[in-house]
Length: 132
Image (cartoon, rainbow, N blue to C red; front, side, top):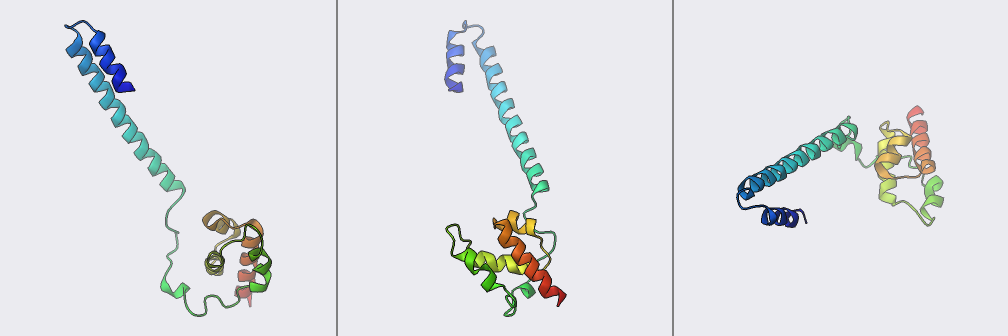
């Protein structure tokens, strides 16, 4: 649409002004493109600063052992698995592992999209397991 308007403006301009008008429009288009790229890059930098893609603590293979799910409160979460918006069992297992390594309720909600009740249940059970 913008290109059509630019071509129309150049066509309607007197012949002596056309090169100047074309240069101005081309320069304006390049400036807008450069400004858009700078703003998009800046937006990505700000978003990355506020929402880091990687957890501050390192996750290693020791988190995922044969005993990683020991103490998982299956009987307590079973009713949540039967509901209409039931979370995926693998997501609950991951939430359990994160909770056993100190992640809080809000972190599980934000990272995994769990309901507050389920996230709080897992965090509380993990805390009780650590306190034993």
